[in-house]
Length: 176
Image (cartoon, rainbow, N blue to C red; front, side):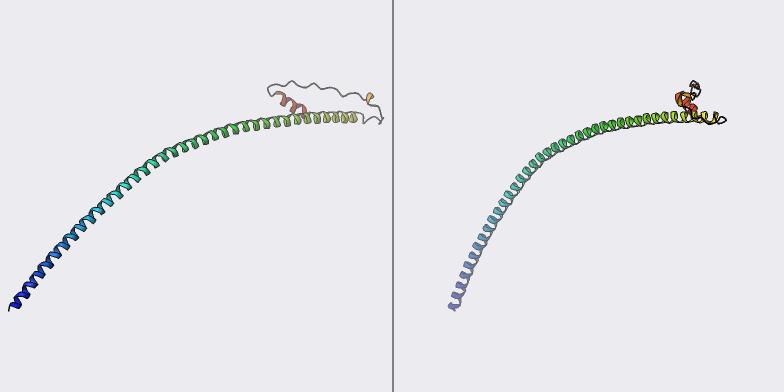
């Protein structure tokens, strides 16, 4: 029976050694896990710090660009407003010149119309005098006389314009 006791003793020693090795292995796993966890925390903290630093740099860069963009926008707005002012001034000048040219053209047309009307009135007046002279001598035999022997038609006195002004007097005179 001693053999059984020796085997049990050997088994228990072996079990004790195995438990001790397992405890050491567990301690080593716990130690490695804590070390890995600490390194992972350090890495995550470092990564978070880098992200924070990059975010701060990005915010600073964006703020600088924002100010630069505001300045550029203000410059563009001012240039645009200046361009609008210049365009407005140019348009007013062109409209003024165009208005003056139209007025000059209308005045010129009016003057040429007045001149043509006066010439036509004189021509019609002379034709009327010639017709009256012809009608007055119709009873007489037709004798070809020189122009100097044809008596001049009597001059009519024009009425003085009253409230109607010159145009009404001319219209009145032209209707006779």
